[in-house]
Length: 114
Image 1 (tube, rainbow, N blue to C red):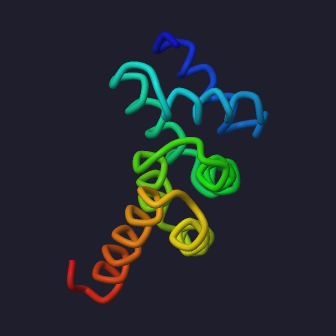
Image 2 (cartoon, one colour; image 1 turned 90 degrees about the horizontal axis):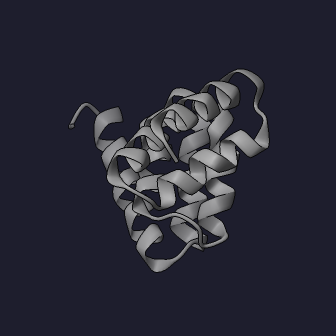
C-alpha cells in the first residue's frame, strides 16, 4: 500500500479505532516493502494501547512476526507488557522468542540497567 494510504489508515485507526484501518496497518506491517512495514509499525506504536489487542490477536493467530512483537515492546505500557507475556506463552516459536527478548529488555529498562 502506498505511503499516503498507510498514513490515512494510521490517522483513522488512531482517531476513530476503525478496525479495518487497524487491520490495514497490521497487514502492511506483516508484508510488502520495507518502507511500508516500518511506517505501519510506527503508526501502530503511535496509536498506543489502542493497538495492543489488534496486534496481540494477529500474533496469536499466526499473522505477523517479530516486527509486530516490537510494536508491543515499543508501546511499553502495562497493557502491552501483559500482551507480551501472552505472546511469549502462546504464539509461534519465532514470536515467543522475540516476546521473551522484549520482556527481558523492558525489565532491564525498568530496573535502570538498560
